[in-house]
Length: 544
Image (cartoon, rainbow, N blue to C red; front, side):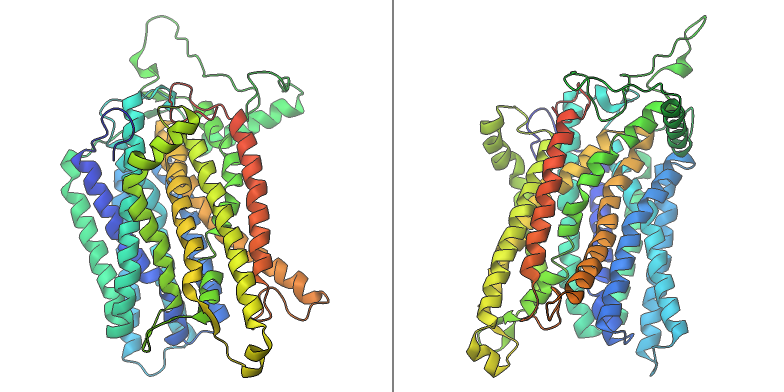
């Protein structure tokens, strides 16, 4: 990818890490994409129980990177954390594979002990991912820099910024390619050759990725800084200091019209370190990082992080209610072939794969016409564009669902009692494709934003913050469904919005609600972005 300006050629170590990441996504999606089917058909769980189990597992898997990041940045280094967590990952996959092979040769597989061992292996995979995912991405971005950065990322040169943008775009291209192969190929293997092979192949692939990663050990750049205080301790210390000042009445807000109004409470530009006597190389900003800057950097990201949660909730829909819609629509091509509803999820990944290489060559020049900025748009603007597109996707989903409901409630269909609505499943494609396009803007922008807006020693935590958005979003989605179901079921309506009878359900109302919540989040996000004091020397990270 071009990256807009400057040289954006990635090093061999960067390319190797991107390949390793795509193999890991193949392994993960090969297990996760069809896990509901395994739980219902093999473990004999009910559909609702299986769905809740998968949602909980995915949520925990997305939240654990926060713990893994603190471990890597506070006690270990990223390289060691990657190796240890990848071994845990493979052990979990081996346990899952052996469990599947054992159940294939056992008449009864639904005992509580068997189920417990299954979930132990799944959550062992989660533990492995908790350290693996944030560290691998941060470690890959570290390979771009052959010289030490300054203490905060505000002094990144323009070429380094362009390389990071290119890296995060190709990173996402790689993991989407691996995900697409995992979803399509492994689903076929599991349905055709059984779950033993269906879990064994991802295990072998993950083991091979560890070998590939280890082969590049001599060429990797290992970035380390002299830490004055551990990141976790620094954040706790910073919170205590803020509370102490607040209780002491020593915090004053800047005037509303002040150019210095920021998200944090009257934060100074940087801590100036004065050394009595001779100059000490140990206190050079490039090699020594002060705790309060890192703690503030994390805390000031939280408002932006919170505004992205609705986007994460919207992205839970393709694997749940979009698929449920498709099950009731006309899915046949010819007389014999029926399109599996879940297959349309690949439209999101295909959209990302096709659009990513064209982002710099087509999309950025178009955006440049409106913004008159050589870069096209900064990171926060890129995230906002994706949030806007996700809202449009929800509006289209609501309109299509309304059309499906009108057709399903026609008298002749009600009398025939058929569950299939004479409306092609391809009516759902626009909402899938739009979510894929929004992914290119928002998700890639989130990765770059959370990585670049924290100090070097806390960049693994920055990646974990990005991953945790989707973990919390998964839990919020389940909570929102429970609350809505409780309210609509207890009202005068005969059926809730999520009725099992899709002719009586009101998913269109749910989509309109998500569009409204998304609009509110976007409005707050835009206002927060205007006041966010990003790194002024980095053209790609300024929120102004």
